[in-house]
Amino acid sequence: MSTLLLLQRLALLPSFCEGQQNQVIHAEQTLDLSVLYHLFEEYSSVGSITVMDVFLGIVCFLVVSLGGIVVGAIYGILAAFTSRFTSHTRVIEPLFVFVYSYMAYLSAEVFHLSGIMA
Image 1 (tube, rainbow, N blue to C red):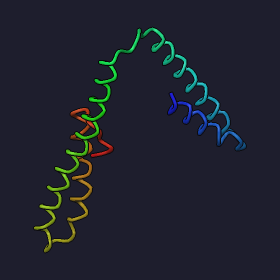
Image 2: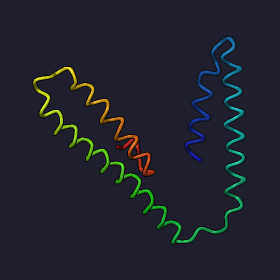
Image 3: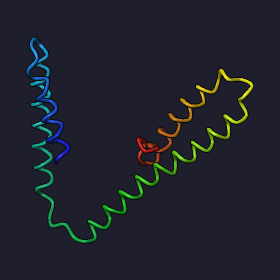
Image 4: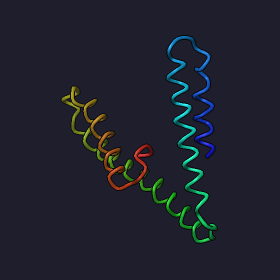
């Protein structure tokens, strides 16, 4: 909820600009408010939250975040090992940086882990 409220406040910042940008900003604010309304409707139908729900939420958070870090570390080690043997062809080193970074992101997303942390 705090993230949505933060986004709502950030959407208000450029609303003081002039021109047609105001119409886009107000449309975005209306969309944000409708998403927030439906989110509150959905969560109001949820019953009580048990201790097991909180525990599973913490475990899920740890699996997603630490799993993304592990995937990123694996691709980082692979990139370091690969770049070790490319000293005579310096042209392709930047290619390895971008390819391995993107592959770490995609691999983490495939397994529903944190691609940003990878």
